[in-house]
Length: 334
Image 1 (cartoon, rainbow, N blue to C red):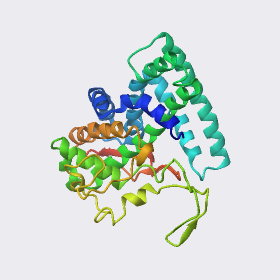
Image 2: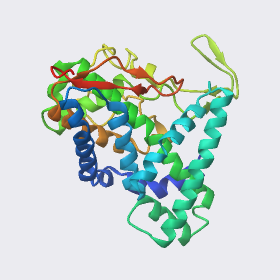
Image 3: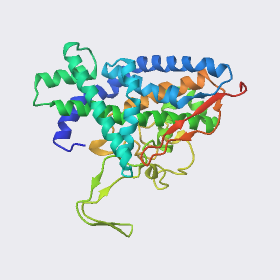
Image 4: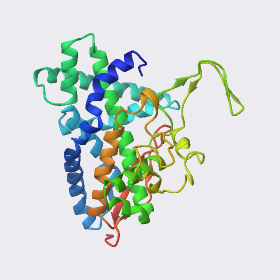
């Protein structure tokens, strides 16, 4: 993870493609992918069978969206799923030696793939993020080195795939657990946005910040001394459930985000799901749009959707996500 001025230079290069306006241009593409994934789930659900929403929808959607952003063939992007998951496990401060080794091996594999992709984009440039970054590199190699280019690509994919998949799964769980709140998904964009923001607050995908903060001196907080040079992580999930920030924080209540700016409650409190400061998640708007395009369509297409059985959680110290999220249509059990 880079710090200024390197961080500022690299973020400036990529941020133009992650503005709200640019991401909103992707809405039709995202809506098309959402519809296609739901079409794929429909036959089994309508036969009364259980479908794993995590595998068939939540994981597939962000990967296919990134494929569009990067100009990657769908088969290529889906083949990277296992590698990205291994890298995320290796990033945990509690990772075992085998997890660290698997993460290192997967990281090398993903970086090699992106090295090959960059070479292909040099001879077949298109209107996608990879082509844009390759063009910036070739115009001025001092602006963006080969290593930085590869690191940026897999970093964007790493940061936006599994977290978005987890956010989709948790938002669907909220929709099923709180049917009295589904009306937010049947109205206008303001209501959908309120539901999405509350889902992001209520069940943040990342338990703590992946970016360490290093104590510059001994600091006492709450009677505990944090020693100089200690690796300090922000516990995102705890901050989002802080009663001093959010009234009745364990209740799922989209009204707290109705008509507000993204991430800000009606009381002016900011949720921590996407971080804060110079390392605020660059893909926050992309994740929000995927949720906003998904949830109303799931609700409309499958209004009787219910859990087929309790979800299976993926064991992880860092990411609150699923191994399986089986669903079926209520009243059509096989």
